[in-house]
Amino acid sequence: MKLSFSIFPRKYGLFPYIFLVYFGFPIYYLTKESGVKQLAGYGMVLLFLLTYRQLYFLMEKKAFSYWLAVQLIIVFILSVFYSLNHIFLGFFPANFIGWYRDKKVFKRGLFSLAFVEIVPFIYHVVRTEQFFTPKELLYFVPFLIIMLISPFGIRSMNRRMELEQELERANQRIEELVKREERVRIARDLHDTLGHTLSLLTLKSQLVQRLIPVDSERARSEAKEMEVTSRAALKQVRELVTDMRAIAITEELLEVQQILRAADITYQYDGDIDFSNIPPFTQNIISMCLKEAATNVVKHSRATHCSISINLSAEKLKAMVRDDGMGVPLPTVAFGNGLKGMEERLALIDGSVLLRNQNGAVLEINVPIIKKEAAAV
Image (cartoon, rainbow, N blue to C red; front, side):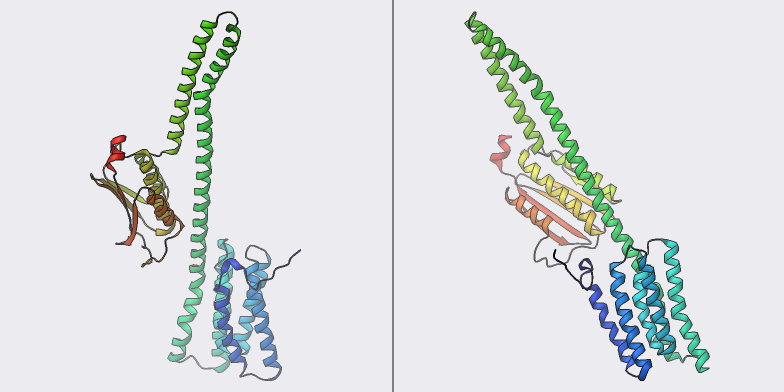
């Protein structure tokens, strides 16, 4: 059995490691101490470092609060009995307090943090019998305020991440239900289309076998009917497969509207509504691209409004998907998987896709209309 060890959970990336830089400050202030007090200070910093690591591994466990309490106690002791500058270690527990989901527990954690940060100030005034100078207040107070506010920001960020994950799981569930419904529909269509026909062919084949010795002419007639029936069944199967593969643009626009409205994004469509002259294969590819674009708007744009326009001319189809979100980082060196997939699909019909920023993101799809292909429809 292979054992793996990691300093911090990999899912948090480099974030926990970046915070390690701030451990240089308490170590620096401890160099000004001496003797047993200095050794005890270094010991508390090492214990603080251990609590920092453990808290990342215990996010959903009861021991999380115990380790956080130890961290707060260390900040309190160092701030009161060593240097007041150690209160800046409060940024560490402030981050973890924001991870509490329960509102009551979050408030208790926030109160504990405020106690640990404010009491050392009061103790300093009482011990020195001198109030802070304006320069000292300007040095401590802004950071103290940020420290006490930061748990709210962390909690809000985590809540948003949870909602995005829930939305992604809901979308996956919807896709599974759609696939399941599609399988049921296909099974029903196959049964309705082929079930009776195959039963009829079975009966006729049995009849032909009985007629061959006694009435060969009627047997040939029945066999001819079987051929006609089987060809009709084959045509029905081809039509069914065509319906399964092709997605009309008008149908996809309705689905896109539902996807956007489910995400509380307002929707507007402008442009042509008759796409009957566009071949089914081309419509299918454009429909998949529109769905991918709408999905990207929901997942990544943070938009409140999305508009789609499709305009047809004799030479090409031009579709534009606009949103009022945060846009995309440009220049884009490489498309993401979704946009790369659009490029690959559109390449099959000599189409192209362009992504740019204009008060949000704008996705432009251009597909040439091949006259020969259009005439054959």
